Image 1 (cartoon, rainbow over the protein chains, first blue to last red):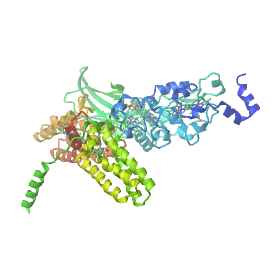
Image 2: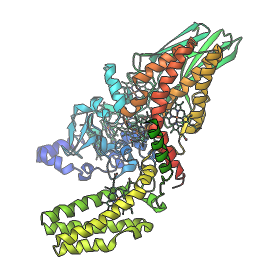
Image 3: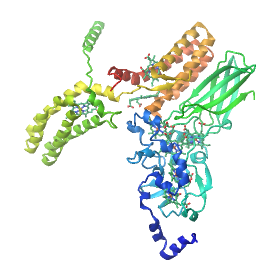
Image 4: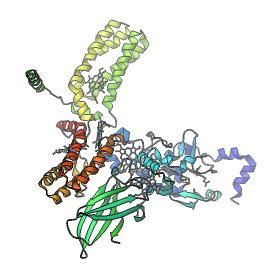
Length: 303
Length: 273
Protein backbone atom coordinates (compact mmCIF):
# COMPACT_ATOMS: atom_id res chain seq x y z
CA UNK A 1 0.00 0.00 0.00
CA UNK A 2 2.67 2.42 1.10
CA UNK A 3 4.46 1.88 -2.21
CA UNK A 4 1.45 3.13 -4.05
CA UNK A 5 1.32 6.47 -2.29
CA UNK A 6 3.85 8.33 -4.39
CA UNK A 7 2.34 6.97 -7.56
CA UNK A 8 -1.11 8.12 -6.59
CA UNK A 9 0.35 11.56 -5.98
CA UNK A 10 2.11 11.52 -9.27
CA UNK A 11 -1.04 10.68 -11.14
CA UNK A 12 -3.14 13.19 -9.27
CA UNK A 13 -0.95 16.24 -9.25
CA UNK A 14 2.00 15.68 -11.56
CA UNK A 15 5.68 15.45 -10.89
CA UNK A 16 6.52 19.11 -10.42
CA UNK A 17 4.00 19.60 -7.72
CA UNK A 18 5.11 16.58 -5.74
CA UNK A 19 8.66 17.80 -5.87
CA UNK A 20 7.72 21.13 -4.37
CA UNK A 21 5.33 19.66 -1.87
CA UNK A 22 7.92 17.47 -0.18
CA UNK A 23 10.81 19.90 -0.32
CA UNK A 24 12.09 20.73 3.14
CA UNK A 25 13.46 24.19 2.45
CA UNK A 26 16.00 24.36 5.26
CA UNK A 27 17.93 21.42 3.81
CA UNK A 28 19.19 23.67 1.06
CA UNK A 29 20.18 26.39 3.52
CA UNK A 30 23.31 24.72 4.89
CA UNK A 31 21.74 23.12 7.96
CA UNK A 32 23.59 21.35 10.79
CA UNK A 33 24.67 17.85 9.79
CA UNK A 34 22.36 16.35 12.36
CA UNK A 35 19.49 17.52 10.17
CA UNK A 36 20.79 15.38 7.29
CA UNK A 37 21.17 12.59 9.82
CA UNK A 38 17.41 12.49 10.38
CA UNK A 39 17.16 10.56 7.12
CA UNK A 40 20.76 9.54 6.33
CA UNK A 41 21.29 7.97 9.75
CA UNK A 42 23.97 5.46 8.83
CA UNK A 43 26.03 7.95 6.91
CA UNK A 44 25.68 10.50 9.69
CA UNK A 45 26.90 8.05 12.32
CA UNK A 46 29.88 7.09 10.21
CA UNK A 47 30.76 10.71 9.59
CA UNK A 48 30.46 11.48 13.31
CA UNK A 49 33.25 8.95 13.87
CA UNK A 50 35.41 10.31 11.08
CA UNK A 51 38.30 12.72 11.33
CA UNK A 52 36.46 15.10 9.01
CA UNK A 53 33.92 15.81 11.74
CA UNK A 54 36.65 16.85 14.20
CA UNK A 55 38.89 18.77 11.83
CA UNK A 56 37.97 22.07 13.53
CA UNK A 57 38.00 20.83 17.12
CA UNK A 58 41.04 18.54 16.96
CA UNK A 59 43.47 19.45 19.74
CA UNK A 60 46.52 19.30 17.48
CA UNK A 61 44.84 21.59 14.98
CA UNK A 62 43.87 24.10 17.64
CA UNK A 63 47.39 24.08 19.04
CA UNK A 64 49.32 24.28 15.79
CA UNK A 65 47.05 26.94 14.27
CA UNK A 66 47.69 29.03 17.42
CA UNK A 67 44.16 28.81 18.60
CA UNK A 68 42.93 29.11 15.02
CA UNK A 69 44.44 32.56 14.61
CA UNK A 70 46.59 31.57 11.64
CA UNK A 71 44.14 32.54 8.93
CA UNK A 72 45.72 30.44 6.22
CA UNK A 73 44.99 27.32 8.26
CA UNK A 74 41.22 27.63 8.41
CA UNK A 75 39.78 27.08 4.94
CA UNK A 76 40.25 23.31 4.63
CA UNK A 77 39.29 22.66 8.24
CA UNK A 78 35.87 24.39 8.02
CA UNK A 79 35.11 24.84 4.33
CA UNK A 80 32.07 26.54 2.85
CA UNK A 81 31.82 24.58 -0.36
CA UNK A 82 33.99 21.81 -1.75
CA UNK A 83 34.67 22.05 -5.47
CA UNK A 84 36.82 19.66 -7.50
CA UNK A 85 40.52 20.56 -7.44
CA UNK A 86 39.89 23.96 -5.81
CA UNK A 87 41.03 24.97 -2.36
CA UNK A 88 37.86 25.95 -0.49
CA UNK A 89 37.19 29.18 1.39
CA UNK A 90 36.41 29.20 5.10
CA UNK A 91 32.77 29.45 6.20
CA UNK A 92 31.34 31.58 8.99
CA UNK A 93 28.73 29.38 10.66
CA UNK A 94 28.90 25.91 12.22
CA UNK A 95 32.67 25.85 12.01
CA UNK A 96 32.76 23.33 14.86
CA UNK A 97 31.40 20.70 12.46
CA UNK A 98 34.62 20.77 10.46
CA UNK A 99 34.33 19.16 7.03
CA UNK A 100 30.58 18.49 7.20
CA UNK A 101 27.69 17.28 5.03
CA UNK A 102 26.69 20.49 3.30
CA UNK A 103 30.27 21.57 2.64
CA UNK A 104 30.89 18.42 0.63
CA UNK A 105 27.43 18.12 -0.95
CA UNK A 106 25.60 21.44 -1.27
CA UNK A 107 26.31 23.65 -4.30
CA UNK A 108 25.30 27.25 -4.48
CA UNK A 109 25.48 27.16 -8.28
CA UNK A 110 22.63 24.68 -8.71
CA UNK A 111 20.98 25.26 -5.33
CA UNK A 112 20.95 21.52 -4.82
CA UNK A 113 22.65 18.56 -3.21
CA UNK A 114 25.27 17.01 -5.48
CA UNK A 115 26.07 13.33 -5.28
CA UNK A 116 27.12 10.22 -7.19
CA UNK A 117 23.62 9.04 -8.18
CA UNK A 118 20.59 9.95 -10.24
CA UNK A 119 18.06 9.90 -7.40
CA UNK A 120 14.49 10.70 -6.58
CA UNK A 121 14.90 12.70 -3.38
CA UNK A 122 11.74 14.67 -2.60
CA UNK A 123 13.04 16.41 0.55
CA UNK A 124 15.85 18.16 -1.32
CA UNK A 125 16.79 18.74 -4.94
CA UNK A 126 19.68 16.51 -6.03
CA UNK A 127 22.07 16.70 -8.94
CA UNK A 128 23.96 13.76 -10.34
CA UNK A 129 27.60 14.80 -10.46
CA UNK A 130 30.32 12.46 -11.77
CA UNK A 131 33.00 14.40 -9.84
CA UNK A 132 31.86 12.53 -6.74
CA UNK A 133 33.29 9.26 -7.94
CA UNK A 134 36.54 10.93 -8.93
CA UNK A 135 39.57 11.75 -6.77
CA UNK A 136 39.16 15.36 -7.88
CA UNK A 137 36.58 15.96 -5.16
CA UNK A 138 39.25 15.29 -2.51
CA UNK A 139 41.97 17.22 -4.35
CA UNK A 140 41.28 20.78 -3.15
CA UNK A 141 42.29 19.87 0.40
CA UNK A 142 44.43 16.75 0.11
CA UNK A 143 46.55 18.60 -2.41
CA UNK A 144 49.90 16.91 -1.94
CA UNK A 145 48.42 13.43 -1.65
CA UNK A 146 46.35 14.04 -4.75
CA UNK A 147 49.34 15.08 -6.84
CA UNK A 148 51.27 12.04 -5.64
CA UNK A 149 48.31 9.88 -6.51
CA UNK A 150 48.07 11.43 -9.96
CA UNK A 151 51.75 10.80 -10.57
CA UNK A 152 51.25 7.16 -9.60
CA UNK A 153 48.91 6.58 -12.54
CA UNK A 154 46.71 4.40 -10.32
CA UNK A 155 43.26 3.51 -11.62
CA UNK A 156 41.85 3.29 -8.10
CA UNK A 157 40.32 6.49 -6.73
CA UNK A 158 40.63 7.82 -3.19
CA UNK A 159 37.03 6.70 -2.60
CA UNK A 160 37.76 3.14 -3.79
CA UNK A 161 40.07 2.74 -0.81
CA UNK A 162 39.02 5.37 1.75
CA UNK A 163 35.23 5.09 1.25
CA UNK A 164 34.68 1.33 0.92
CA UNK A 165 31.08 0.53 -0.04
CA UNK A 166 28.29 -1.92 0.77
CA UNK A 167 24.83 -2.37 -0.68
CA UNK A 168 22.40 -0.58 1.61
CA UNK A 169 19.78 2.11 1.76
CA UNK A 170 20.87 5.74 1.68
CA UNK A 171 18.17 6.75 4.15
CA UNK A 172 16.85 5.04 7.24
CA UNK A 173 13.73 7.10 7.87
CA UNK A 174 10.52 5.15 8.12
CA UNK A 175 8.54 4.72 5.92
CA UNK A 176 10.33 6.63 3.16
CA UNK A 177 13.29 4.28 3.17
CA UNK A 178 11.11 1.69 1.45
CA UNK A 179 10.44 4.00 -1.49
CA UNK A 180 14.08 3.80 -2.47
CA UNK A 181 16.09 0.90 -3.77
CA UNK A 182 19.34 -0.21 -2.17
CA UNK A 183 22.46 1.30 -3.64
CA UNK A 184 26.17 1.28 -2.87
CA UNK A 185 26.58 3.11 0.42
CA UNK A 186 30.06 4.56 0.78
CA UNK A 187 31.66 4.57 4.19
CA UNK A 188 31.69 8.13 5.49
CA UNK A 189 34.07 7.24 8.31
CA UNK A 190 36.85 7.83 5.76
CA UNK A 191 39.07 5.21 7.41
CA UNK A 192 42.80 5.96 7.41
CA UNK A 193 43.40 2.27 6.54
CA UNK A 194 46.59 0.42 7.37
CA UNK A 195 49.43 -0.58 5.13
CA UNK A 196 50.03 -4.30 5.31
CA UNK A 197 52.79 -6.71 4.36
CA UNK A 198 51.45 -7.00 0.82
CA UNK A 199 51.74 -3.26 0.23
CA UNK A 200 55.50 -3.21 0.75
CA UNK A 201 58.27 -5.30 -0.77
CA UNK A 202 61.10 -5.82 1.72
CA UNK A 203 64.58 -7.14 1.17
CA UNK A 204 67.63 -7.37 3.38
CA UNK A 205 71.27 -7.39 2.43
CA UNK A 206 74.26 -7.86 4.71
CA UNK A 207 77.36 -6.08 3.53
CA UNK A 208 80.59 -4.93 5.11
CA UNK A 209 79.22 -5.30 8.66
CA UNK A 210 76.11 -3.34 7.74
CA UNK A 211 72.58 -4.33 7.01
CA UNK A 212 70.81 -2.62 4.16
CA UNK A 213 67.03 -2.83 4.27
CA UNK A 214 65.20 -1.96 1.08
CA UNK A 215 61.51 -1.09 1.21
CA UNK A 216 59.46 -0.68 -1.94
CA UNK A 217 55.94 0.75 -1.83
CA UNK A 218 54.03 -1.46 -4.25
CA UNK A 219 50.55 -1.11 -2.81
CA UNK A 220 49.69 2.46 -1.81
CA UNK A 221 49.36 4.88 -4.73
CA UNK A 222 50.62 7.85 -2.71
CA UNK A 223 53.43 8.47 -0.26
CA UNK A 224 53.75 6.35 2.84
CA UNK A 225 53.12 8.12 5.18
CA UNK A 226 50.89 10.69 3.46
CA UNK A 227 49.89 14.13 4.72
CA UNK A 228 48.87 17.57 3.65
CA UNK A 229 49.56 19.42 6.83
CA UNK A 230 49.59 16.91 9.63
CA UNK A 231 52.59 15.08 10.97
CA UNK A 232 52.12 11.31 10.63
CA UNK A 233 55.19 9.15 11.15
CA UNK A 234 56.23 5.68 10.17
CA UNK A 235 58.85 3.76 12.16
CA UNK A 236 60.90 0.94 10.77
CA UNK A 237 62.69 -1.08 13.41
CA UNK A 238 65.32 -3.70 12.76
CA UNK A 239 65.79 -6.29 15.49
CA UNK A 240 68.73 -8.65 15.55
CA UNK A 241 68.16 -11.99 17.24
CA UNK A 242 70.83 -14.35 18.41
CA UNK A 243 70.49 -17.48 20.52
CA UNK A 244 66.79 -16.78 20.94
CA UNK A 245 67.23 -13.33 22.45
CA UNK A 246 67.25 -9.83 21.07
CA UNK A 247 70.78 -8.47 20.77
CA UNK A 248 70.27 -5.43 18.62
CA UNK A 249 67.50 -2.97 17.87
CA UNK A 250 67.41 0.25 15.94
CA UNK A 251 64.65 2.41 14.49
CA UNK A 252 64.42 4.85 11.61
CA UNK A 253 61.61 7.35 11.31
CA UNK A 254 59.86 8.54 8.15
CA UNK A 255 57.89 11.76 7.85
CA UNK A 256 55.45 12.82 5.15
CA UNK A 257 58.37 14.58 3.50
CA UNK A 258 60.83 11.70 3.61
CA UNK A 259 58.33 8.86 3.07
CA UNK A 260 58.23 6.27 0.29
CA UNK A 261 56.49 7.14 -2.97
CA UNK A 262 54.51 4.64 -5.00
CA UNK A 263 56.74 2.09 -6.78
CA UNK A 264 59.81 3.73 -5.27
CA UNK A 265 62.38 2.03 -3.07
CA UNK A 266 64.08 3.50 -0.05
CA UNK A 267 67.27 2.12 1.46
CA UNK A 268 67.90 2.09 5.16
CA UNK A 269 71.31 1.43 6.64
CA UNK A 270 71.70 -0.33 9.95
CA UNK A 271 74.87 -0.97 11.76
CA UNK A 272 74.56 -3.88 14.16
CA UNK A 273 77.85 -4.14 15.99
CA UNK A 274 77.03 -7.65 17.20
CA UNK A 275 76.73 -11.06 15.60
CA UNK A 276 73.15 -11.96 14.73
CA UNK A 277 71.45 -15.08 13.39
CA UNK A 278 68.11 -13.69 12.38
CA UNK A 279 66.50 -10.34 11.77
CA UNK A 280 63.03 -9.12 12.31
CA UNK A 281 61.58 -5.94 10.77
CA UNK A 282 58.71 -4.18 12.51
CA UNK A 283 56.81 -1.43 10.73
CA UNK A 284 54.78 0.89 12.94
CA UNK A 285 53.05 4.23 12.55
CA UNK A 286 51.73 7.13 14.55
CA UNK A 287 49.08 9.21 12.80
CA UNK A 288 49.07 12.95 13.43
CA UNK A 289 46.52 12.70 16.21
CA UNK A 290 47.78 9.48 17.80
CA UNK A 291 49.70 9.40 21.05
CA UNK A 292 51.17 5.93 20.65
CA UNK A 293 52.65 3.90 17.87
CA UNK A 294 50.64 1.04 16.40
CA UNK A 295 52.09 -1.95 14.56
CA UNK A 296 51.27 -2.22 10.86
CA UNK A 297 53.12 -5.44 10.05
CA UNK A 298 56.28 -7.41 10.68
CA UNK A 299 58.62 -9.47 8.53
CA UNK A 300 61.30 -12.02 9.45
CA UNK A 301 64.61 -12.68 7.73
CA UNK A 302 65.18 -15.41 6.86
CA UNK A 303 61.48 -16.20 6.65
CA UNK B 1 91.69 52.80 1.28
CA UNK B 2 91.91 50.10 4.00
CA UNK B 3 92.16 52.80 6.60
CA UNK B 4 89.07 54.37 5.24
CA UNK B 5 87.12 51.16 5.51
CA UNK B 6 88.41 50.61 9.02
CA UNK B 7 87.40 54.12 9.95
CA UNK B 8 84.05 53.61 8.40
CA UNK B 9 83.67 50.42 10.40
CA UNK B 10 84.59 52.11 13.66
CA UNK B 11 82.18 54.84 12.81
CA UNK B 12 79.28 52.54 12.00
CA UNK B 13 80.01 50.30 14.96
CA UNK B 14 80.10 53.16 17.41
CA UNK B 15 77.07 54.53 15.69
CA UNK B 16 75.55 51.08 15.92
CA UNK B 17 75.92 51.11 19.66
CA UNK B 18 73.13 53.62 19.72
CA UNK B 19 70.81 51.17 18.04
CA UNK B 20 67.78 50.84 20.25
CA UNK B 21 64.60 48.97 19.80
CA UNK B 22 61.77 50.40 21.85
CA UNK B 23 59.38 47.77 23.12
CA UNK B 24 55.72 48.35 22.27
CA UNK B 25 53.21 48.85 25.11
CA UNK B 26 51.90 45.49 26.35
CA UNK B 27 48.29 46.29 25.38
CA UNK B 28 49.24 46.16 21.72
CA UNK B 29 49.39 42.36 21.92
CA UNK B 30 45.62 42.33 22.52
CA UNK B 31 45.24 43.16 18.85
CA UNK B 32 47.35 40.33 17.49
CA UNK B 33 47.08 36.55 17.53
CA UNK B 34 46.84 34.56 19.67
CA UNK B 35 44.84 37.03 21.82
CA UNK B 36 42.91 38.37 18.86
CA UNK B 37 41.64 36.30 15.97
CA UNK B 38 42.97 38.90 13.55
CA UNK B 39 45.87 41.28 13.00
CA UNK B 40 43.53 44.01 14.22
CA UNK B 41 46.07 46.75 14.73
CA UNK B 42 47.69 46.20 11.36
CA UNK B 43 44.25 46.25 9.73
CA UNK B 44 43.55 49.58 11.44
CA UNK B 45 46.79 50.91 9.99
CA UNK B 46 45.80 49.92 6.48
CA UNK B 47 42.42 51.60 6.96
CA UNK B 48 44.20 54.77 8.11
CA UNK B 49 46.45 54.72 5.13
CA UNK B 50 43.54 54.33 2.70
CA UNK B 51 41.53 57.08 4.45
CA UNK B 52 44.50 59.43 4.20
CA UNK B 53 44.64 58.87 0.45
CA UNK B 54 40.86 59.32 0.32
CA UNK B 55 41.13 62.80 1.83
CA UNK B 56 44.05 63.92 -0.31
CA UNK B 57 42.61 62.68 -3.60
CA UNK B 58 39.17 64.17 -3.04
CA UNK B 59 40.42 67.51 -1.81
CA UNK B 60 42.57 67.74 -4.89
CA UNK B 61 39.56 66.97 -7.07
CA UNK B 62 37.37 69.30 -5.03
CA UNK B 63 34.89 66.51 -4.30
CA UNK B 64 34.08 67.90 -0.86
CA UNK B 65 31.26 65.45 -0.18
CA UNK B 66 33.57 62.47 -0.40
CA UNK B 67 36.47 64.30 1.18
CA UNK B 68 34.30 64.80 4.27
CA UNK B 69 33.46 61.11 4.37
CA UNK B 70 37.14 60.13 4.28
CA UNK B 71 38.22 62.81 6.74
CA UNK B 72 35.69 61.60 9.27
CA UNK B 73 36.72 58.03 8.73
CA UNK B 74 40.37 59.03 9.18
CA UNK B 75 39.58 60.84 12.39
CA UNK B 76 37.53 58.00 13.81
CA UNK B 77 40.25 55.45 13.13
CA UNK B 78 43.09 57.72 14.15
CA UNK B 79 41.47 58.17 17.56
CA UNK B 80 41.08 54.42 17.86
CA UNK B 81 44.87 54.12 18.14
CA UNK B 82 44.62 55.82 21.54
CA UNK B 83 41.56 53.80 22.52
CA UNK B 84 43.35 50.56 21.76
CA UNK B 85 46.73 51.46 23.24
CA UNK B 86 46.25 53.96 26.07
CA UNK B 87 49.93 54.88 26.24
CA UNK B 88 49.90 56.01 22.64
CA UNK B 89 46.98 58.40 23.07
CA UNK B 90 49.28 61.26 23.92
CA UNK B 91 51.30 60.75 20.73
CA UNK B 92 48.26 61.63 18.62
CA UNK B 93 47.75 65.05 17.13
CA UNK B 94 44.07 65.22 17.99
CA UNK B 95 43.67 68.97 17.61
CA UNK B 96 45.16 68.95 14.14
CA UNK B 97 43.03 65.95 13.24
CA UNK B 98 39.93 67.85 14.32
CA UNK B 99 41.18 70.82 12.27
CA UNK B 100 41.44 68.61 9.16
CA UNK B 101 37.79 67.66 9.43
CA UNK B 102 36.80 71.28 10.02
CA UNK B 103 38.86 72.52 7.08
CA UNK B 104 37.24 69.96 4.80
CA UNK B 105 33.80 71.11 5.91
CA UNK B 106 34.84 74.72 5.26
CA UNK B 107 36.29 73.68 1.88
CA UNK B 108 39.67 75.16 2.74
CA UNK B 109 42.38 73.20 0.90
CA UNK B 110 45.39 74.92 2.41
CA UNK B 111 44.17 74.40 5.98
CA UNK B 112 43.54 70.73 5.16
CA UNK B 113 47.05 70.34 3.80
CA UNK B 114 48.73 72.04 6.74
CA UNK B 115 46.97 70.08 9.43
CA UNK B 116 47.15 66.81 7.56
CA UNK B 117 50.91 67.22 7.36
CA UNK B 118 51.14 67.45 11.14
CA UNK B 119 48.97 64.38 11.50
CA UNK B 120 51.16 62.62 8.94
CA UNK B 121 54.24 63.49 10.95
CA UNK B 122 52.72 61.78 13.97
CA UNK B 123 52.35 58.65 11.87
CA UNK B 124 55.97 58.76 10.79
CA UNK B 125 57.25 59.50 14.27
CA UNK B 126 55.48 56.55 15.80
CA UNK B 127 56.60 54.27 13.00
CA UNK B 128 60.20 55.29 13.56
CA UNK B 129 59.95 54.26 17.18
CA UNK B 130 57.78 51.20 17.11
CA UNK B 131 57.21 49.67 13.72
CA UNK B 132 60.27 47.44 13.70
CA UNK B 133 59.54 46.18 17.22
CA UNK B 134 56.01 45.32 16.15
CA UNK B 135 57.30 43.43 13.11
CA UNK B 136 59.68 41.40 15.24
CA UNK B 137 57.16 40.71 17.98
CA UNK B 138 54.13 39.88 15.89
CA UNK B 139 55.31 38.79 12.46
CA UNK B 140 58.39 36.67 13.05
CA UNK B 141 58.33 32.88 13.37
CA UNK B 142 57.38 31.76 16.85
CA UNK B 143 58.97 28.51 17.97
CA UNK B 144 58.00 28.97 21.61
CA UNK B 145 56.84 25.72 23.15
CA UNK B 146 57.26 23.78 19.93
CA UNK B 147 58.39 20.17 20.29
CA UNK B 148 60.02 17.80 17.86
CA UNK B 149 60.17 14.03 18.15
CA UNK B 150 63.77 12.93 18.26
CA UNK B 151 64.11 10.03 15.83
CA UNK B 152 67.08 8.61 17.73
CA UNK B 153 65.70 8.49 21.26
CA UNK B 154 61.99 8.58 20.39
CA UNK B 155 61.50 11.38 22.93
CA UNK B 156 60.11 14.87 22.48
CA UNK B 157 62.74 17.61 22.38
CA UNK B 158 62.53 21.38 22.37
CA UNK B 159 63.86 22.91 19.15
CA UNK B 160 66.94 24.04 21.02
CA UNK B 161 67.76 20.58 22.39
CA UNK B 162 67.07 19.00 19.03
CA UNK B 163 69.45 21.40 17.30
CA UNK B 164 72.11 20.71 19.92
CA UNK B 165 71.83 16.93 19.54
CA UNK B 166 72.00 17.20 15.77
CA UNK B 167 75.02 19.52 15.89
CA UNK B 168 76.71 17.14 18.28
CA UNK B 169 76.28 14.26 15.80
CA UNK B 170 77.74 16.44 13.10
CA UNK B 171 80.84 17.27 15.10
CA UNK B 172 81.34 13.70 16.23
CA UNK B 173 81.09 12.50 12.67
CA UNK B 174 83.88 14.86 11.69
CA UNK B 175 86.10 13.94 14.64
CA UNK B 176 85.66 10.18 14.43
CA UNK B 177 86.10 10.04 10.70
CA UNK B 178 89.30 12.08 10.87
CA UNK B 179 90.51 9.87 13.72
CA UNK B 180 89.74 6.78 11.65
CA UNK B 181 87.26 5.34 14.18
CA UNK B 182 85.00 3.83 11.58
CA UNK B 183 82.29 2.31 13.78
CA UNK B 184 81.76 5.43 15.80
CA UNK B 185 81.87 7.65 12.76
CA UNK B 186 79.19 5.59 11.12
CA UNK B 187 76.93 5.65 14.15
CA UNK B 188 77.28 9.41 14.51
CA UNK B 189 76.73 9.82 10.78
CA UNK B 190 73.56 7.74 10.70
CA UNK B 191 72.20 9.54 13.74
CA UNK B 192 72.93 12.89 12.13
CA UNK B 193 71.03 11.90 9.00
CA UNK B 194 68.08 10.64 11.04
CA UNK B 195 67.85 13.91 12.91
CA UNK B 196 68.43 15.99 9.83
CA UNK B 197 65.60 14.29 7.95
CA UNK B 198 63.47 14.53 11.09
CA UNK B 199 63.57 18.34 10.81
CA UNK B 200 60.87 18.01 8.15
CA UNK B 201 58.38 17.22 10.92
CA UNK B 202 57.99 20.87 11.80
CA UNK B 203 57.49 22.83 8.58
CA UNK B 204 53.74 22.07 8.44
CA UNK B 205 53.19 23.82 11.76
CA UNK B 206 53.57 27.14 10.01
CA UNK B 207 53.74 26.63 6.26
CA UNK B 208 51.04 25.46 3.93
CA UNK B 209 52.07 24.15 0.56
CA UNK B 210 55.15 22.47 -0.70
CA UNK B 211 57.15 25.41 -2.05
CA UNK B 212 58.59 26.70 1.23
CA UNK B 213 59.53 23.19 2.32
CA UNK B 214 61.34 22.53 -0.92
CA UNK B 215 63.64 25.49 -0.39
CA UNK B 216 65.48 23.63 2.39
CA UNK B 217 64.37 20.08 1.70
CA UNK B 218 64.13 19.89 -2.07
CA UNK B 219 65.79 17.63 -4.57
CA UNK B 220 69.28 19.16 -4.17
CA UNK B 221 69.31 18.53 -0.46
CA UNK B 222 68.02 15.01 -1.01
CA UNK B 223 70.92 14.32 -3.37
CA UNK B 224 73.42 15.68 -0.84
CA UNK B 225 72.00 13.51 1.91
CA UNK B 226 72.31 10.45 -0.31
CA UNK B 227 75.89 11.40 -1.09
CA UNK B 228 76.60 11.99 2.60
CA UNK B 229 75.12 8.61 3.51
CA UNK B 230 77.39 6.93 0.99
CA UNK B 231 80.40 8.80 2.33
CA UNK B 232 79.48 7.76 5.87
CA UNK B 233 79.17 4.12 4.84
CA UNK B 234 82.64 4.28 3.33
CA UNK B 235 83.96 6.62 6.04
CA UNK B 236 85.33 8.83 3.29
CA UNK B 237 86.64 11.86 5.18
CA UNK B 238 86.84 14.21 2.23
CA UNK B 239 83.36 13.52 0.96
CA UNK B 240 81.90 13.66 4.46
CA UNK B 241 83.35 17.12 4.93
CA UNK B 242 82.33 18.32 1.51
CA UNK B 243 78.71 17.28 1.93
CA UNK B 244 78.42 18.51 5.49
CA UNK B 245 79.75 21.89 4.46
CA UNK B 246 77.29 22.12 1.65
CA UNK B 247 74.40 21.28 3.98
CA UNK B 248 75.57 23.77 6.61
CA UNK B 249 75.63 26.53 4.09
CA UNK B 250 72.51 25.71 2.13
CA UNK B 251 70.27 24.24 4.76
CA UNK B 252 71.26 25.12 8.33
CA UNK B 253 72.63 28.55 7.50
CA UNK B 254 69.83 29.68 5.27
CA UNK B 255 67.11 28.41 7.56
CA UNK B 256 68.77 30.17 10.50
CA UNK B 257 68.87 33.47 8.68
CA UNK B 258 65.16 33.31 7.98
CA UNK B 259 63.93 31.70 11.20
CA UNK B 260 66.45 31.71 14.00
CA UNK B 261 67.60 35.31 13.78
CA UNK B 262 64.14 36.90 13.93
CA UNK B 263 63.09 34.36 16.53
CA UNK B 264 66.02 35.19 18.81
CA UNK B 265 65.22 38.86 18.37
CA UNK B 266 61.64 38.13 19.29
CA UNK B 267 62.76 36.33 22.40
CA UNK B 268 64.60 39.46 23.47
CA UNK B 269 61.19 40.97 24.10
CA UNK B 270 60.45 38.10 26.47
CA UNK B 271 58.29 35.05 26.08
CA UNK B 272 55.26 36.47 27.86
CA UNK B 273 53.17 38.76 25.77
